[in-house]
Amino acid sequence: MTVYLYYGEDSYLLNQKIDYLVNQNVHAEWRAFNYVKLSGNEKNIAAKVFTEVMTLPFGEGNKIIHTDSDSLIGSLSNEDNNQELENHLSRIPSSNILLITGNKKPDSRRTVVKTILKYAQQEEFPLVPSWDKKGIVNLIGKYAAAHQVKLTPDVTDYLAEAIGNNTARADSEFAKLAVYASEQIISIEEVKQLVGNQNTDYLKLTIAMLRNHPSLAIVQVSKLIDNNEHPLKIVATLTSIFRTWFITKAGVETKLSDTKIAEIAELKNPKRLYYLKQEVKFVGVQKLKHSLTLLVQLEAELKSGVDNLTSRIAEISTI
Image 1 (spheres, rainbow, N blue to C red):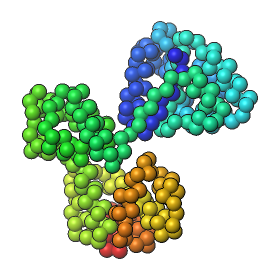
Image 2 (cartoon, rainbow, N blue to C red):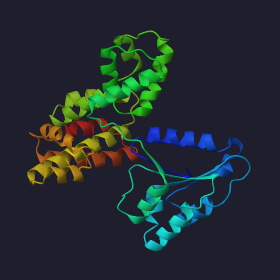
Image 3 (tube, rainbow, N blue to C red):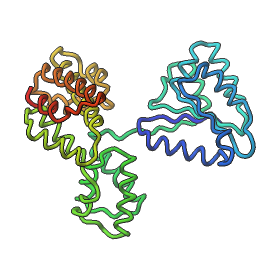
Image 4 (tube, rainbow, N blue to C red):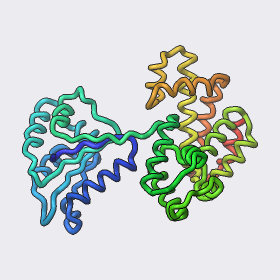
């Protein structure tokens, strides 16, 4: 197979797969010549991809031409482009690989996408939804097995809550736990010392802000800072959550369909909408709108060197 299409929102696993493909096919001493990455910033990217994919590798090993799906597909907009694409895909030298990656599967209704799918080996790297507890527990079990760490049910539940669907962190934390455990069962108290639960801190923070408890919100912000969470990351996380809440509440008040609300809120699974509605059931849409405005102001302040994190969080918690 000379064409690979990798896509999905789990960027950690996707990048691991890319590294594996490159290491398996490109000779280390010739990597600078034979691993060619063409990004969306390149002009005439399709033409450059076609040129590179038909050019034989230098020295030993194979050659990989890596491009992102949006850039490549976006530059192939008509039937002439598609015919050129078909001609090249059918004649790629056996020593060469065309690697196409993206965070979502390309629209298979498009002619050029149908042509790519005709020649490509596909693999998806989906992110377990944050609300899917069973899926996250399975993810924790997978990494525990991979690192040979023995877990008790209470430790599994704690790690599922603490790590969530973050595969990069799961891999890192279990590598640490494996060294500490040395094939022995670790107690819940030991695990809590080794693996911090920042997800719970974020949950408590957002609920405190939503329910107008400024003192509790300040405590939770302090915990996140103590756990080395960057203020800009805290604000980005809060902005994402409040944006979803605002869209949900505004959609309910304007009587949009659940399908439309889920689409606007960019929910990966529309079933999550039921829980979002419950969370904002007794919150006014103006509070959510004003909160978003203040979070945007806070981001600008932090980027300009003004640290108003605690005072802005307190202000939002009293709207």
